[in-house]
Image 1 (cartoon, rainbow, N blue to C red):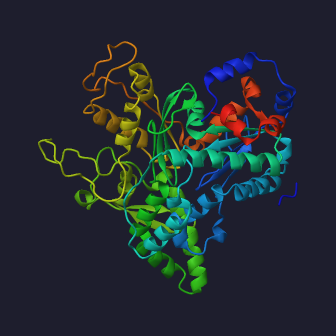
Image 2 (cartoon, rainbow, N blue to C red):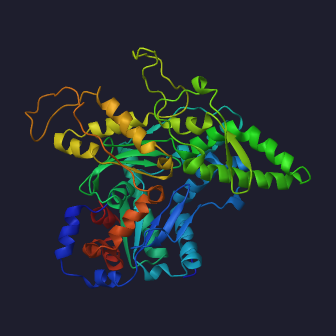
Image 3 (tube, rainbow, N blue to C red):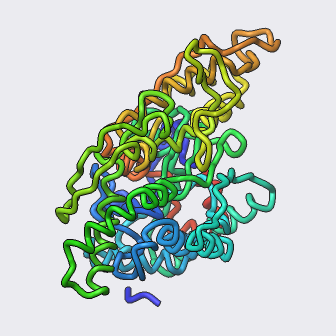
Length: 469
């Protein structure tokens, strides 16, 4: 075929004092590589560097049939690559040889892992059915939460072992480590504990991390709602405007040329939505109540001008939709949500996930370290809005006070909890897990953590669960 959860802090401390094995010393002499496969962007590069050498789509635009595929369908095709170890290994081999111009057999490899294995809603026949429903305008707008079960846990373990086998045997890497993306995002923000909010293209997750260990469901929650859903919404708002503009500019062009240009223009729209085109409102945003918002013109890299009114705020508002908030002039509560329709209630997801931690002091630590990462976290004003909404949500959420410093009795409301959202520069948030992996794989105390080729030969792929819990 080919031409050629993370380690916890205690493990790092013990590794720093342990004698080097020959395999670990050999691995340390080589530049380690870090790889994160995302359905929107792949990140691949050397440990110790602050940005990946390779930062690109897993499925090139020239392989996409039409501009409609730039949304959910393109992400599903990318996810199908990720869920197939052979295809993923082929991508790694091609990227290392052509973009990095090196051999994987010469470098230890740190693989960044998702908080869950991609379900059929994204990768399989169910995902294809969703595409067809979307084309027909009849796709359900329901946002789904991934529920962990004994069957899904077994599936996750099996998928992990299959990936290890392909990487060790077919790519021939000298050493391997697998680390959870949430743990690495903590490291990238100089933390070992926190509530990590990953806002990706196909999912949004909240993971409780303590001392370098990512807790499993239900202390980690995943919702199948992400950036591609925002792309689809923005497309419905801007499609008539963009089509009319391009058809006027390209009046003498062929249909094929116009279609190609539309696809390129939509890719610019998608790229720009978090970096200037759209932003997060200070509070709950209702399109109908803000219909008279003045239009703002935005020039894309291809010189196409798009005009946005309520879309500037309504796109990112999907992360706060369905909340019950005051609607009346006197500030009294109403049972009718300000926003209705597709979306998710991210503040509630954060509070529910962190609230499942019953040890009071740990819960305080988690809510004081809410770490944002992922491309969809880069909307202007996102950290401020999330922090404000989490404070409001916690004020009415009864959580038991147990663990150290309490008598174990149920404790009232959590309005006294201090909340702090940690958000690095947007460029760092886009590659948060990669950056954490880059830091981890370059630490001197990390030498003993690699699973060497010799260890794999002796114990097999199942050793990865012990080496990388």
